[in-house]
Length: 148
Image (tube, rainbow, N blue to C red; front, side, top):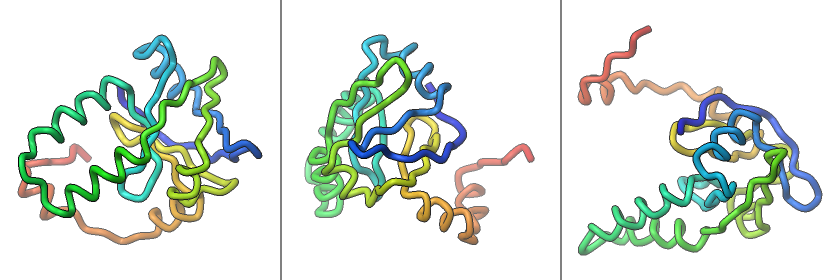
């Protein structure tokens, strides 16, 4: 499953939002019971499948003596963990603790980020689009050649 694209949405008074139809369809195809894991990563609310969460835990357990930074990342991931049902219309409830930590208010952007989706405050996403960054060196170091 790959999440691509983005949509601007508004959270309702209970902190619920409607996922893009193709996100909902992908989720319900891979996870018929319609459960996603919401947590925090890199300052944003992210959504991953339960299978991805299990793999994440397995990978993190490989680290025998995690640094303080890795311990903090693990703390944030685990403390944000919430199982969220995805309704037939694609509605998902974002708990208050994730809305607060992710700085989400009414206007948000739901964006595809490959194997996960992210939920950003709309103003933060617009600021990201204005950033000027050069990743050419890192791409070259990893032998990545973009086909465009």
